[in-house]
Image (cartoon, rainbow, N blue to C red):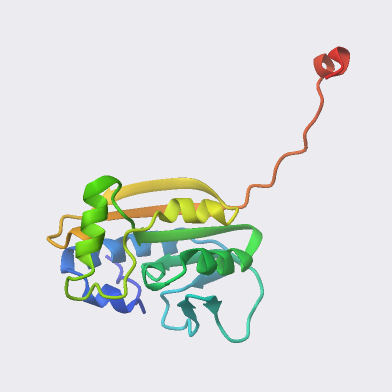
Length: 184
């Protein structure tokens, strides 16, 4: 079995072992399927920051074929700004791959998110967000989405998504013969 790729996510080191193991396993799968030029936000080689103003990395601004984040966005105060910055770094046919904790819907989700910030290691983490909706708000289309639950006593870290998103270029619209005849 190959070694799991190293990760820079500081919160990953704080996670219960069962959660960290599942996130690392999924990160390995995502990286194995990555194509072309890859920006791995969790790689020790990535020196940029994911913060409230978006993505800050010195130097290289060229587009990437694949951008991967496993748990880095949970610390971003402004998810939309950060995702917008990532989207701007994608090639036209590029893909964004995320493995991130998400909020549970409803009253129980609100309660878990509110009380969860009081738990050790959870301060400053934003685990109650709708990551797929935020990705869609940047103009990307989610083409693969898996919601999964990890058995842990730290309830805000039970619900995750693994998703793949891309820009879908609309196909050229053609007018068929029946449309021409009816004048529509």
